[in-house]
Amino acid sequence: MEFERRALLAALAFALTTGCARARSAADGMTLDPSLWRAYTARFLLPEGRIVDTGNGGVSHSEGQGYGMLLAQAAGDRVAFDAMARWTDQTLLRRDVALHSWRYSAGQANPVADPNNATDGDLLIGWALLMAGRRWAVPDYLKRSAAIRDAIAQRLIVRKQGFTLLLPGLAGFDKKDKVVLNLSYYVWPAIDAFAMLDARSWVPVRDDGLRILKAARFGPSNLPADWLDIKGDRQVEPAEGRDPVFGFEGIRIPLYCLMSGRRNACDPIARYWSSLSRAGKPIPAWVNVVTGETAPYALSRGGTAIAGRLLGRNALFSGPDGDYYSSTLGLMSQLKP
Image (tube, rainbow, N blue to C red):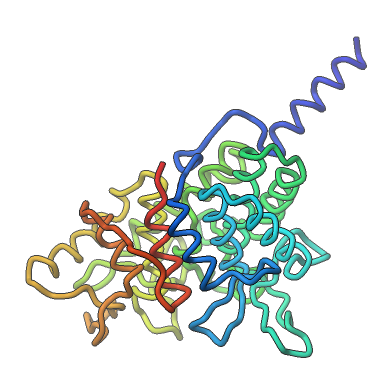
């Protein structure tokens, strides 16, 4: 009897750790038009499984690998997913901890010169492995996802300044008198999925992240800055030493709000964009949240698709363009439940 009890407990622990439990987040089971995915891979996916950032000198990122794996899973492309998962594991995975170096520069003597991670990339990769492991019944993917989830919980979730915070990376963000934060690194649907498997670690991150998003409403636009300083006791400010803009990175905040069923969390962004629309003005690529100054050029096509979804419009994205980031945002905006 004791042996059977231990076996049962071990099986239950494995199921919870690897994601075999039946709990699902709101974004599980997403689908993507395979024709959009094929057009994307033709531009940005190399045969070995590397997603190329065409707008940044042909480098690759853990973020890009995570996006590519999510999109491949949603499009049902097992071959592409396996190639990306293999390249990511062999090239970016650190050997000391189950996190990924953030950048790969092809042609360099040491293409992975900076071992620091980017937490959003790890969240995306871990979540993609979880969904693919469930979809195609691959225990190794579930095991790898659990290892990433645990590494983030142990190394990147900290209790500081009155909040439970998600560090953007292992090095450079936890300062003596503050924590530097980026809300676009809070991939809400991934956090939801992980919270269903490890509530103790992830529910406080989720809840305090939403509190910070609510507090991060600055200037005449009432928008969050891409980078924030968390100081003192729950003091939230635009990050010192960085341009106080809502822009290139912040555009992902409404994307993840929409994907996780939290549109209301981004109401200030929707109100700002709606006011521009009513005035017949294009949505700028960035907004200085302190001065109100705006970019002299509009959002990318991918960003515009996200804005359309937030504003409740028919935000179809016709297909990838020449820019990796815009195209990725565009395809992410087209994921369907």
